[in-house]
Image (cartoon, rainbow, N blue to C red; front, side, top):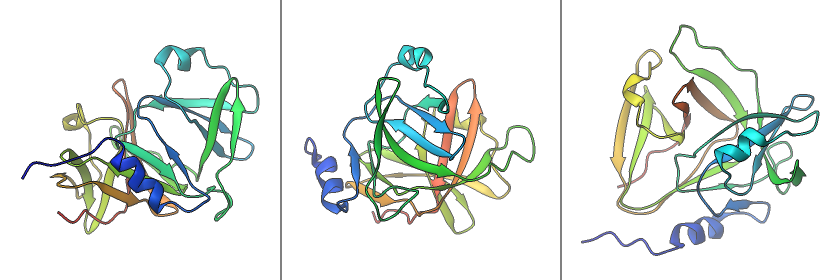
Length: 207
């Protein structure tokens, strides 16, 4: 039986499961983020941008731009303000761009050796949506599963995994919406290929 994925079906499914405090990112593409180092609040643009827009972006102090990349999921939502759950997500304009308060990162645990990922515990209410018929990649450490969240898998064969970690991949037979825990454990690789991140732990989809 062919997989049927109606236009906007994933977005509608995500909206139906969000509390009133939530916010859906209705498009995919390149998004940029800024951090206020005095509060550690991270803000992300609500609309996709171009690489040139990121290069030209100059947030006023105390905000500092921290990076931009493509999300690995097809749609994203935020269930609540990460600093004040269960309060509504905050938005504000930063240097001409509407931005959403998406995260409060903890201290980064740097890679133990060159090539290994950095690890950061991040407070956020992040929900990920994936379309039916696509493949989704996971990093597994024992019984804990971390789903691809930032970047694509084109250079994954070059990534150095944490001890005992393995990659796996599943093909989705239906739409999949998954809530990241709050806080979320994140693994980040930074390279010339851009950022790559797996986050969780999450429950694997039921196929």
